[in-house]
Amino acid sequence: MRTPLPLLLLAGLLPAAHAAPPATVTPGIDFSHEDWTLACDNTRTCRAAGYQRDDGDSEPVSILLTRLGGPDQPVTAELMLGQYDETTLPRQLRLQINDTALGKLAYDAGAGTADFSAAQVAALLASLSRNSRVVVVGDDGKRWTVSDRGASAVLLKMDEFQGRLGTPGALVRKGTRAEASVLPALPVPVIVLGRTVATRPADQALADSPALRAALAASTSAEECEALHPDGTMFGDEGPQAITVQRLSANKLLVSQGCWRGAYNTGDGYWVVNDRAPYAPTLVTASAVDDELRTIQEAQKGRGLGDCWYSASWGWTGTRFVKTAEARSGLCRLVAAGGAWEMPTVVTKVQEPH
Image (tube, rainbow, N blue to C red; front, side, top):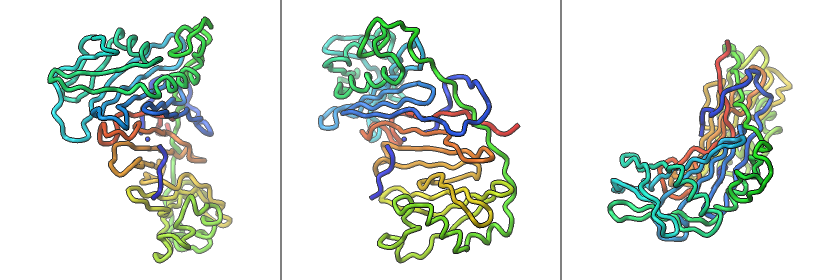
């Protein structure tokens, strides 16, 4: 069974500061410990999500903490009640931390989600840096408990990534270092898609070229693309997988073919090649699910239940494909089909050419 990477496209939260497409977009980080997980993107926005214990009997639930990069940024918090399985949601929710009542949450009963007030966020953050018991209680008496296991490690990693360690605004390791020393937020990179040209009849003939297939196999490992190295794999009795050829520019082509199949995911390989030998393939990804020529998309379930996903996309700039988005949906905890949250590590603004 092929294991996909840990999951969604997001629009940037900050204004774009430039229009020149970068050669690459440097991703942020993701980090998980116990029942908490973190994703920070290339603008220095961080999102941390906590869940019920995976070895306990609490109903599925998750809290998402979000903090923009830069000095003096507040933390916001929202909650989602488990709704992967059909359930009856309460009409009201109250927050309780370490047996202290903290009032009603701003709750949307139709969506099963809630926002925390500033005072509730402050109490939550203060409790998560040590042992805490975070419980939400419905007006029907039902209770959901968010685990504190892993929270302090995740929040420490968030502080480190955003450059807050030792400052008054740090979540875990506070200090007296000036708040102005916190790393600034970064702009959302702008990726301008390049124009393409029409595919030619001769391009289609390359789909049956043994030389092109050999070039793809020589440049791509069996681990990346099993179908190009079929001996001893499920592709051994199937014969070569069909190759699709599309023209990108005057001398570059986009070629693709199926690469691997797992229990609940599949992956197609995409390469940029010269339109004549030597083809010199450059692999974009071996785990795509679709393309629109100038954009390539990847989306993989974290497990068969589909309660956690990974996704990514790439855009053609006219000379190369660059990653335009990468995200995951959080831990696999049966909170919601498709995952509870969108937690990106790469965000960009994709534009059409002028």
